[in-house]
Image (cartoon, rainbow, N blue to C red):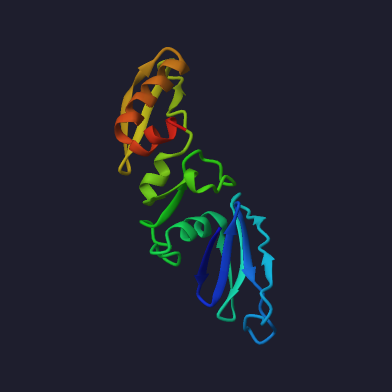
Length: 170
């Protein structure tokens, strides 16, 4: 069990479930040591989210960010800048185990996504492999089969996208 405070709210993380200390209608913790299970729902983007009232203001919070914060309370949960993302190593947005999460920049987070890295070009009847590195497209080569083009792309991805290499080990 991990107990932590977020603003004025005490929370507990027990066996991948969150519990929140009960509040009265004045926005104060109840005198009884009562805890309620936090209910998560799936957002349109596929992430698990919840509504929590903190300091009398309702907030929508992502479960993966809450899990990361519970384990890393020095981390700024409110910083939503591009350099403060939480990445799902196995790309499953609902797998919010701490072992599957890591802090990442936006660029690193983009490295960890499934992509064939190739397309068919009718003009020369070949499969073209390419990769995006720091916002620029790098041409890898042209191949007879989709499988060859995809393998060439994966070889380059291992070199230029280190988060992808970590993901392969899962």
